Length: 112
Figure (tube, rainbow, N blue to C red):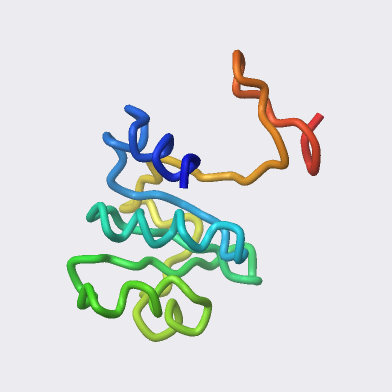
């Protein structure tokens, strides 16, 4: 909950209109908050060149929880290609085991 609150309070999140986030279970609450905040959500598919774009304006709010799952994203999302120049990703949410509080550098899994 604290992580989500920090995310929502950040100026980067507040300014963002399109947020990219991975589909792992660890990111489920972040994906849900992205939609609840009225931001479009970009989810990568297994094919690295394709994504699903979820637009909260086109999804009934009662469907948000289902929409952030892989199955729900397939139902509610539109396919976009990585090189779609009409889409600008404003924020990319990346998970990490730990981050340095002063620099924000990732530590732990997949970090250096």
